[in-house]
Length: 281
Image (cartoon, rainbow, N blue to C red; front, side, top):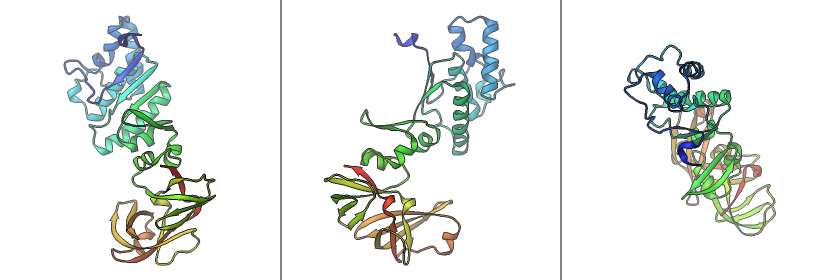
């Protein structure tokens, strides 16, 4: 099927709105190209304006709109033709953080309402995790893994996916000794998964790692020295040196401020064996 005959919509990275047209004319453009009757165009544009919450702005020029409103116009223009699939090429990249966060929620709500398949291209993993029902991770033009956000985050198919998704990750390479045990340069790491012999990487997400002067009730325990501390608002990020390896630890909650460690402190870090996730190398 020739490209111009495929029933798809497109939202471009830089929106590509027509500056000489008002909001109504921009949204109606695709319908006019399809030679839809004027009365039907008015009906469909009115309907999509209500969906994207732009009622009353149909006579505005696009340069009179905010970034978020322009984004909605581009989305409405693509959806009004009722495509089977909507392609979105990093459409939120030009927006500031607050508007981008708001538009992520709005896009998801709109998708649920119109029930059109959205294929959303982004390098921002927060967007991918927030908005997707299913995510495809690609590297060098090849799909590395397809799955739900939960599957991608907690069951990565390889070390690339494990490192790519999530703000940070701890990966320790080792050799499977027997079921549930992996020998690494740091010592034996306990896992709960059934393992086959061979080289693997043990993945531990930073939020799964405990840190204290003295730890109890963990299966994997290591001693280290705090390298740095970064306060990130909702959590504190520690970087801890363990035998020349840097572990990243995220601790949430205001109580952490009262017992916060400092660079140079000797600490213990550890995690339960069910937090050890095995990743193929």
